[in-house]
Image 1: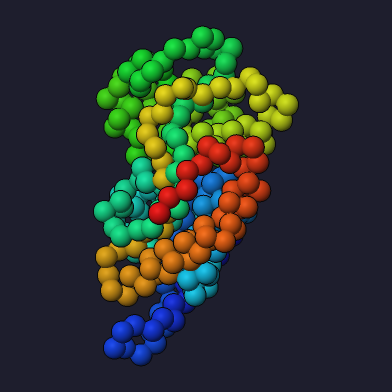
Image 2: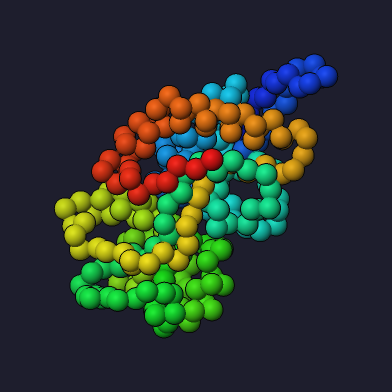
Length: 246
């Protein structure tokens, strides 16, 4: 059951007394990077806020509903990838990875695709309300939207030809779902986009201190080496695929 999130901010502002205001933060469930059970993006976000003097708890939403709310600009404060709606708002970016298309190697032996158009007519799996639909369909790709948690099962069963996600996310998912069979899967050498992840807030005076705290805390995590340790512990040998931002 999702836990209602409140983030209590007690900050001193120039010319003002300390202000305390509860703020709700939304996160779309997309394991392993965004997960109520401990995803790297939410772990980093919470620690960055804590380093900046704020205590945080997160409210989890199914990714399809999260994307619909972002499309409607209905969220005030949220953690999300950069390829989703809501990018016009102030934010602090944490990490970046490559968006790629995973596939079962034996089905596309010697694949030489170098752009989306090379996969025209193929069926690509994405999440519900996917922000990728327009660019994929423009390239002639058939988009198959569904729950994120079933994406790689559909890929393995042959119900889709490719699965769209960040390279580091897909590698961890395959290792979890198909241990010992990792070599059966591959992903495209080209990236359909770079995907960063961060904390976003509407451009309002009461939310500006949250972004400032996250930015300050994230800088502290980079400076003392704790961020690098988190990445190494979470991703193992794949940690070098992750780019640190801001």
